[in-house]
Length: 192
Image (tube, rainbow, N blue to C red; front, side):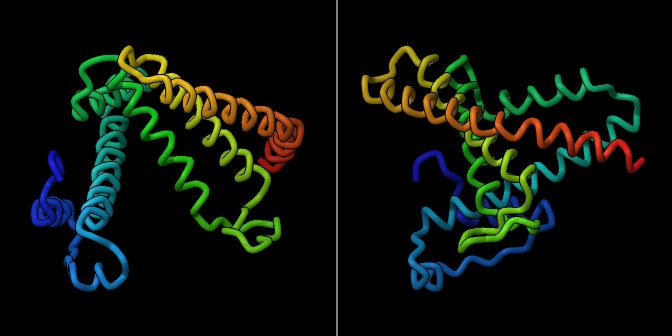
């Protein structure tokens, strides 16, 4: 696992952020998870811990007088932290984030008035639109990442074209919900 922190290093970093974990590779293997998947799970837990810390740090900066432009500049330092050295690196990170956002939104169980129909809780129409827009963003960032990479192969270009097409389909689907959300917005304004 070149370039990946060891399991002990990941556990140590998580501990530093207050998350106590123990790794049992034998139990993980019994569940069909190899050490690579265990490392990926720990790395994602670390991302969550670091994001929670960043949220608290942003709140402290806002309380000290930082404005939206300041926070926007601060957010850009994530690209330096990820080692982005060129535009394709930036798009790779954005694509990774957008795709994970879409995956997580699809997996989280939101309650709401829509029947589940054997799937993860669908939440309400707004949640459905959020999921659809996230899927569109994932497809668009995938396409832009491929377009910004001068070393992409023909298969990558074809995959990016399909991702962009799916992204546009998702945007059209989300746009169909706009009148409903405008009405919801008006109702929400009446309750204050």
